[in-house]
Every structure is written in C-alpha cells, then in structure tokens.
Amino acid sequence: MTHAPANHPVHVGIIMDGNGRWAKQRGLPRIEGHRRGVETVRTIIDAAKDLGIKYLTLYAFSVENWKRPGDEVSGLMGLLEFFLKKETKTLVKNQVRLLTIGRTQELPEAVRGQLENAKKATAHFTDHTLILALNYGSRTEIVDAARAYAAAVASGKEKLNDSSWATFSRYLYTADIPDPDLIIRTSGETRVSNFLLPQAAYAEFVFIPTLWPDFTKADFAAAVATFAKRERRFGLTSEQLKPAVAR
Ligand code: FPP
Image 1 (cartoon, rainbow, N blue to C red):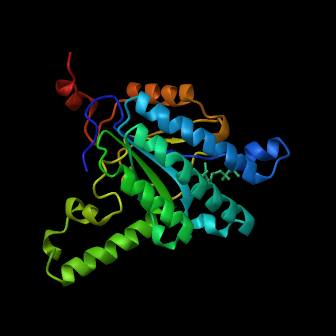
Image 2 (image 1 turned 30 degrees about the vertical axis):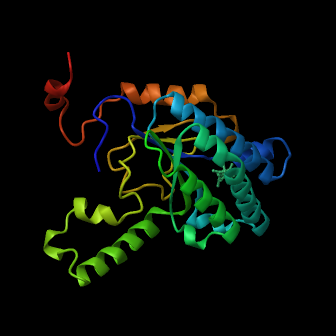
C-alpha cells in the first residue's frame, strides 16, 4: 500500500507494553495493569483524532498471548468485552470506524459479538479508523494470506506469473489499510514481537521507556514530533529525495 508523503504519519501502530511491570511495581495483580492500560487506550484513541492521525492500530492481543496464565487471558478477554460494550458509543460520537486484524474467529463468543456490534455501528465513518490487532501475529497473517492467495490461483482468480507484492498484499488482513508510517513501543523493550512485519517494511520506530499505563497524549505527540524529524528514504539516497521536498 502507499506511504505518507509528508512528515506527518497517516498510520501509527502501537505496541502497548508494560502493563504487567506497572502493576508489579505497585504490588498489584497483573490484571490491574491491564485495567489501567484500558484507560490509556481510551486516552490515546482520542489523542489520535486530535493529532490528525487517520489510522491507529493497537496491538491488544497476540497469537502468543494465549500462553499466559489462564486467569490473565480470561481477564484480558473480559476487559476487551467491557471496553467494546462501553466504548462503542464514544466511537460513534467521535466518528471513528473500528476494524480488526487477526484471527478474531477464535476469540470468545461474547467478545466477537461486541466486536460485530461496534464494527457495524461505525462502518460508515471514513476520517478516522481504529484497528485492534486481536489474536494477531504477522507470521499467522502471512500463512493465512498465502492460503487465500493459493486458493485464488487455483480458482484462476489470480495468475501465479503475475505475483507481486501489490497482488499478494491484497490477501493480508490489512488489504485496505495503508502501511504504518510510525510504530511506537512503550516500556523500553526494543522488539517488534510479530507486529505488522511486512507492512512495517519502511516504517519508522520510536521506542519509549514509559510503561503503557503511564503513556500520555503528550508522549504520543512527542513520538509524532520525533517522526516528523526523520528522513524517510524508501531505499533512495538523501540527494534523490531533495527535489521532492518543497523549499
Ligand atoms: C503488554 O503488557 C500488554 C498486553 C499483552 C495487553 C494489552 C492490552 C491492553 C492494554 C488492554 C486491553 C486492550 C483493549 C484494546 C481494550 P505486558 O502484560 O506484556 O507487560 P509486561 O511486559 O510489563 O509484563
């Protein structure tokens, strides 16, 4: 998909990390960290709109997260269900469309129901999109896309000889979503953790030491400002880019 031409990100992805450590530092159960993390999610969805970010993807639950202790997994699913139930009204009020990426068909029925409601209620909005990555992993996404692509080749809908990134990427979960320009990870970890790997081929990364429950709108704005100072070359040289820069 296309990239943002200007120095303002069209699509920001966030790896929301550090809920567990936030809780541990306070002697609280991990789920308390996630609960506080949901508050930050609310703040950041609002902030994205104010900062003029059209697409915001939040990494809420990975395919690997099922391996966490059972009570944490069910606690997270409960928080997600509650969040969707409560937040749909606000998304409608703020005209934010909700999309998901990931194998959402494997989520608990109650969560799927809330997701369907929220998606349906917001499907007609076009200016701002919130994408929740749920039961998401890039490798799983690539396998799912390869399967769908192979089926399309077998049925004659696609021609193997015409294969290109442009044709194959139409089978990713993100087919209709532009590539992320900026990926932020909180908590000081400097890993990608199976998040939007092919889509982030030319993304800028900003790693922030703040734990997710403490992440603020000001931190978000600072990350966007850092992005604005970066020179994105997309494989070209600095000199080649110069004529394209308005002076
Ligand atoms: C990482 O912190 C966070 C998660 C695995 C879950 C993120 C979920 C939320 C913020 C709440 C639910 C989301 C929505 C959209 C309502 P961690 O537990 O790995 O923290 P740690 O590395 O400090 O242990």
